[in-house]
Image (cartoon, rainbow, N blue to C red; front, side):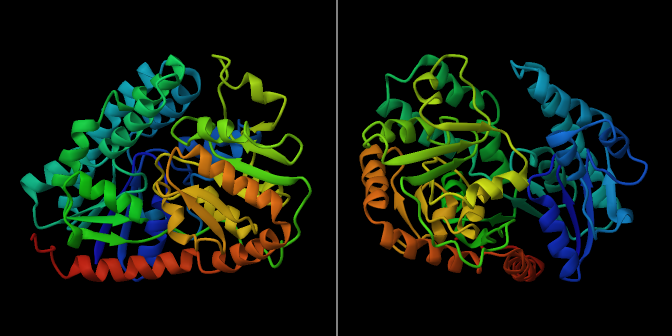
Length: 417
């Protein structure tokens, strides 16, 4: 099957392109920023250092033929990455990305028609222009929406429910929720309507697609793999018990619920490490900065080192399509204490390799954390079970799912009931 995979940014699009190539498909990959030979991206990489350089070097697919990569709007893509760092208001960054999405999408549609492609894969929040143009001018080309995060309207529903349940949250934290939805709510419904098929990593994303009007038969489950190889043995526990959170310390990830749950635990009975970026301009985190370890952003290699020294991964997200950090935690031998709104909960066997809570349930979260503190022997068994489950969460398994998905896609469009 001749397939065009297109993403103006990155996400897990490299993994899909590689999976399709490994499955024998005729694949072309299209993007903006890419470190191919002679590209501005590769030249710019030489002037970076530390974490920035590591991220830039990640903008390249080893083993994927350079001749199969198309770049459009590279300069604007690089400018977008710069604005992400310096434009605190995100005003110019958001406006630029809207322009890129629209014009990049039209280029995708043009290339798909001109190149005789049978299917085009785009990503939620970036697909609308391409898919609407293809629907008008080349409806025979299958339009596949690869959905990594749950759809924005479903995000909004869950976030507003959390605000309603927590009216005393600081205004800055409520804005953290709402600012995400300045653009794109209505477009999400249009994006679903313009798509023929959907690749979903989890039951949580399935629900968000159904919420936006996707029919069940058009949704194909393709869970992701872990970027960490499963440890051989990490059953030793610590006293006090070590909990770790990995991700941006934001309201959407439920950081407020985690911190309030820890307020009810006995001091000295546990430790908490928070890996990832955080913003304390409003002082919301001040009471916790001296109580727990906040690492800020760290290199991926350092993330694994830190995780391997912990006991439990706690991730109370309000909505997460499939937290790769949680999959990586399992590989490090960490049971998951997470919510049903995190796609990674699909991998949790209750009481065996973790526990699944309802989003925002701080009482249940504190109870489960207290259980981990008081049951070191059972916790050690859960750590062994976590590693065992991680051995099934591989990119090879993802490749097999993708292969099966495109057999279905190649067979024709789903029947609407």
